[in-house]
Length: 210
Image 1: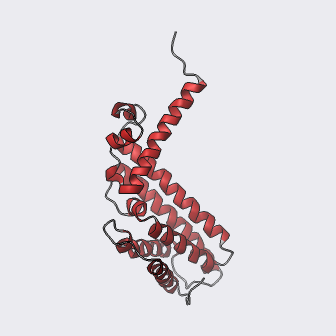
Image 2: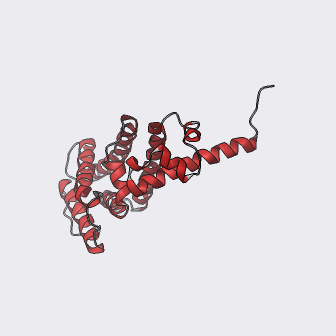
Image 3: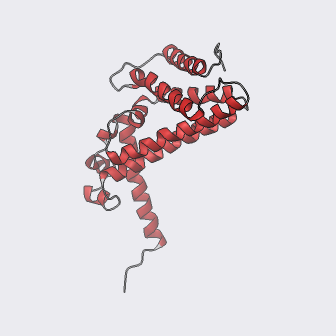
């Protein structure tokens, strides 16, 4: 008679799989994707290396799921912040930049892993989706700002890509793993500087606090 998994065995299997993903995400948050080896993941879960491979085809596939989960969490936070920022496009853009930059500066190791750390092609494919999601959010905000005359006329998709690219590049030196921990004052100054640049790029005067 063929074996049929029960609800309990399925639940145990799901819990074990989730445990491997949580362990991998913890390693990535602490030391990047390079630290999330199958051996390290198994050790955190007090399991064998073979048991990890019984749930995931490869380390790359496991890390791609970790990336997708972490990226989705960040995107959801940004979407919620933007939707709560009010109806003005300038307010929503300011919140997009503030949340993106602020979370990156406060969670530097994970931000570096999501944005810049060299990864396999499988994980890089998830990174492209992650970047595109931010561009999508920015594009809608800029389209609304163009329609209301808040932003100077330009291609909304291109402008959003340029803005998000500028934000990411401006953060490189601050979130690089070997960079010193910034002070609270430096964090605020960096965020305000990035927001100021983005507003000027869209033709909006910025005096802070938007």
